[in-house]
Length: 489
Image 1: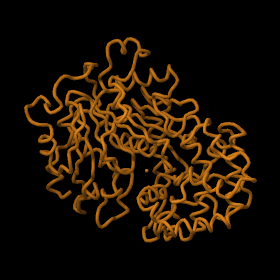
Image 2 (image 1 turned 45 degrees about the vertical axis):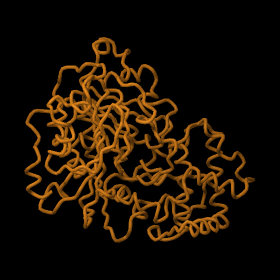
Image 3 (image 1 turned 120 degrees about the vertical axis):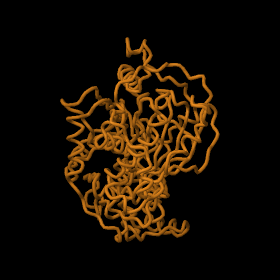
Image 4 (image 1 turned 60 degrees about the vertical axis):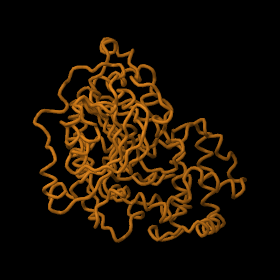
């Protein structure tokens, strides 16, 4: 996947880290009390401050602690092997955060698949179960990058092993049930973690997770764009995108002036022309990824007669003209590398553009420096897809009806157990359990509570009564998806 792709220890320390126990972390446990805990967040029931217990883990170090009422919030580093298969190849520091509520509560393991935020926040499952949250930065996203960077160690198995080691280390403190979650590339990451370490988690909640099983077969995306929304909205979007290529001359001149003023360069893509077209070709995808049908009135209705500035502003608002500059790409090179080696990436036709496109949907190779070698491994996603189909256990997938990334999705099959795929009506890439239709919302919430071991008796008797155990917190539970212009999964 591209951004619309681009509109994802030393031997002593390794030995010192507590290893996984033979008992399954997914074993059934007694239901926890549904109400809020009364114990102070500084007291974990052992008489030892929770920070001291965390920092007693070999390889764990504190970056900072930030105050937040009702929680302890730590930003940490954890020493990880560069290569889990060969610990002699050295180590790197992987950043994570810990939102601590109480060791008697369940814990949610969250990853975005990208950088970790160092501001306190809660994923939806964390609020539902009123639990702790561990958030892990994905390897190779700075500063969690080995030095020197051997890019061959950036793959889904190494990342899953990163999570496994963090879980194993923290499970000795947070002994209750664990769930893994994430949205988009984070939902993919949670899935891969479960595939390689199926005994770690008690449940998986994956949001809007793409599943590009066969990289060269992308007709599902083309069918999506033929029918999504309304014809009026599709015509508006297609018209603006077409005009942006018809007016390539004057708009690229404006792009050059814009880049010069901002100090932007185009060394990775190779030219301003390639970067410009990549931004334009992301426009339609980007709208449906982050906007709603109700937002179609923001799109110029008569693109052919609209002034250049209106076309520019509309494309910039959706795709972002800084996206494919060297400066815009720098943070996301690890994603494009993974898309071009394992994850796959969509290639849509967009027939309304006729012969105006010079490059088509550009592959991930375009957005990775040529000094970094890449080779695509077609069997990797097929393996994961087959595993989910046959072995998914206590896994929930939530998709948005109008999100293009959901065109190719995970589908637990006949071999799965207690697993679900649910769709938010009219939803985009920010779809959540809260947006599901009432019946599905209750079923999903009840499943999450049950997997976490905290389902109240009333919910176990009647799933329709399920609701989050923690009250909504405007700061902790804020979702920024509608304000994003980064069109990667």
